[in-house]
Image (spheres, rainbow, N blue to C red):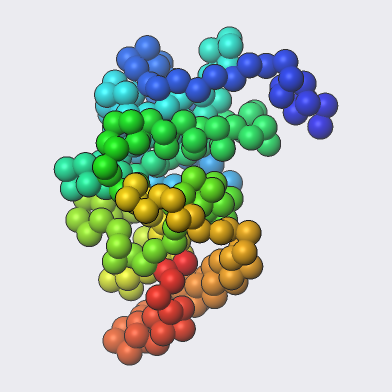
Length: 235
């Protein structure tokens, strides 16, 4: 508790749009992504050194650093269907800097940067984390069915290294343990109220976990049955 208080008041952490000077942090970024995935027991898609380097060079990422240059967090932008859709991916906070509200700051920074680069694009998110879900709905995202997400193979390829990929393939990309979220700049003024719906979201997440993690094979009428149980909300 003392350490968190000290860091909050005395250690300055800034969030920057990436550039080539940040290439030295690539290995630490990849290590943090891997350890975060293991700690959560959920899906964070793995990325190669070359992939992260490309995002840093193209200024399609943000990085959080202390005033002394110590790595604290990261997120990047993925682009689909010629800029029609964007995804803010790979949000991580280094274990040494958690519980300081840094994830929310990084999320806000990458979100605003995305809108500046592609003002007409729809911004997509898929997550199993209720914390990330709240962060996103506070920004203006709304839960949607998977049919409203990008339908290209390239979009779903990023899920191949996720621990829940088997669920996605068994349901033929109709649903997964993740919640699908969408920010549409044309309808950003109508926000989803997370507080009023948090209990429903938690319950539906438990239902999906109970169904998909216990059923080994899902075919034909079983998929239809699951869709009817969960309804049109793909959460």
